[in-house]
Amino acid sequence: MSYDDNNIFAKILRSEMPAHKVFEDDETFAFLDIMPRTKGHTLVIPKNPSINMIDIDPDNLCVLIRSVHKLAPLVSKAMGADGFVIQQLNEAAAGQMVFHIHFHIVPRYLGVPMKHAASEKEQDGILSANAKLIRQEIDKQLG
Ligand code: AMP
Image (cartoon, rainbow, N blue to C red):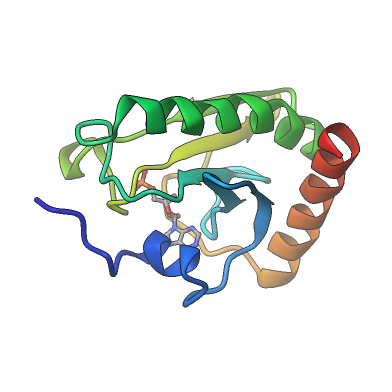
């Protein structure tokens, strides 16, 4: 399979689709999952196109994981979470639905189960409010 320029995340990167952005630098972009498994579920993607772990250039992967490492504790703190899961799926058989590589940051709350993947669209107002809290925490910590 070759990279499809018309996947949803490629469109978000080109601003052809809206996103609840929480962070951007020269090489990576982070935004809220619209069908969050928990409150504050965030996706981190590279700007360079890759499908998944199979085709990504190792340097690009390093850049991506650096952003995940930087953002995950801040997302968790902003949401008042008790911990977080980092998830990354490769190929349809593993549950990959969007074929532009991404890491999931899924905040976890004691006693609160994760919803099934992509099971329920969150209200726009709630996503906006959560994105704002996360942006504020990122601004506070990273300036
Ligand atoms: P994966 O199964 O790892 O490919 O995850 C894809 C994720 O993208 C799922 O959690 C979906 O809820 C999420 N998703 C799909 N469309 C959008 C979108 N337009 N904006 C934000 N997240 C999306």
